[in-house]
Length: 201
Image 1: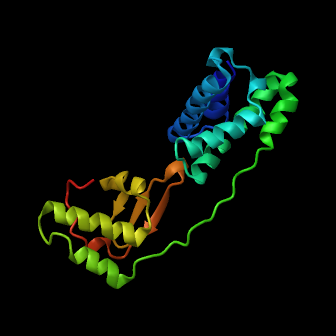
Image 2: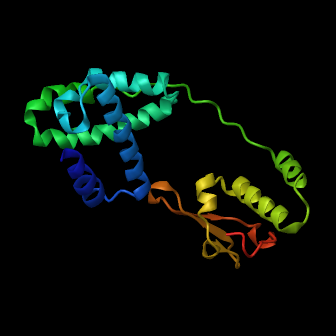
Image 3: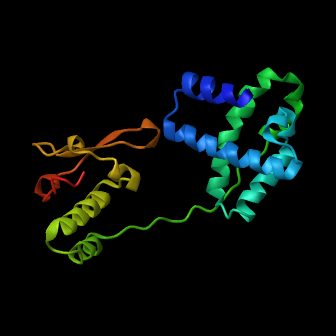
């Protein structure tokens, strides 16, 4: 019942999160409930809010990293999905407040952020020159790699582009649809010179 309220009332109605974000939250709870059943020997319907204590959560995160080989970033994303549920659910079970406060105190895990490199113009030109020079496939690959390099778009943003998103008039740009509904327009002076395959997008 608490999970149903969380997903229907809190995530969809109150916060109006995107379907992709809600799916990520759903996957977190599927993993947690499966782990709790193994760890505590209780089915999800017999699990109480007070069972989600700091010890269970820490054991769950260890399981993600050790057994499922999740990176620290993924571990932190799972914690970020659990926190709003605990904050909203405690209003329906005040007896669980001390346990939930301890669970909410579980910190994000620090990790080293690698230095991101980049390809020089000469290096990306070499990559593009190595592609098949003609044919639909070669033009498609060249278009995608050129856009990826010039716009810095995520792969998911590239594959979501539709023909209407590419503006090729006097002010060329492309409309990118990012996760979390963070859409943006990226100007690109070279779009008009690309040989666009009509069925690319």
